[in-house]
Image (cartoon, rainbow, N blue to C red; front, side, top):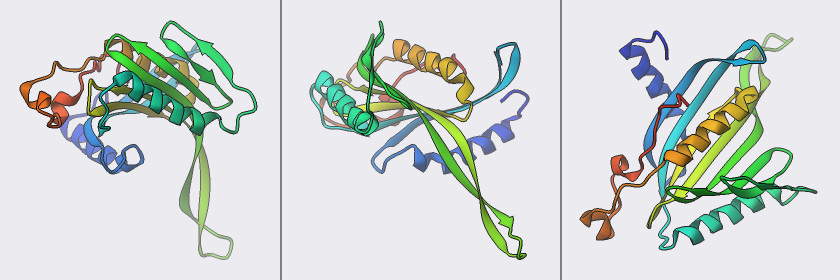
Length: 216
C-alpha cells in the first residue's frame, strides 16, 4: 500500500481478516495474508491492480504426496468440467491439464513437489441498500467479475498448503497467473524436525515458505 502509514496497514489487514471465511474452511490454519494495490500497464494504459493473497494449510492425513495431488486434481476436475461440452487439453512445461469456458486446471510439476494449479473466472453479486420508488429500502445488486487463482501443494505428509489469489482486476489475469506460477517455482517446505517426524502438526509459521517478492 504505497503511502500508507503503519496504522493504515494494520487496519487494512484487520479488515481483510473479516473477509477470510470465503477463502478458508473450518479446519484451515491461516499462515499469511497480503494485498497488492497499484497500477499495471495494459495496452499503453494504466489499469488498477488489486488482489488479495491468502496462504493457509489444511490437514489431509496423506502419506503419498503424488496420490494426494492426484485426488485433489480429480476433485477439481469434476467440479470444473462435469458440465463442459468440450475441454481443451493443456500441455505446458509447468504441467498438464485442461481448460474450459471459465476454468483452467493443471497438474503441476514443481521443484518442491507435485501440486495442483487452477484459475477461475466468476461473477460475484454484491447487494447494497438502495432507495426504492416507494421511498422504502430496496436491495440493489451489483455484479462484479472476479478471478480466483489457487495453488495446492501437498506437504511430505499430513497437510496441504493452499495459496489463493483473488482479484477483480480480471484484465490482469495473465499477470496474476505468472505471479502464482513464480510462487510455485520458488515454494519449498521446511525440512522435517523431530517434532513433525513424531507426527505432530507443524506450527503455522513453519508450515510453508514462499516468496512475496512479486507484490501479489
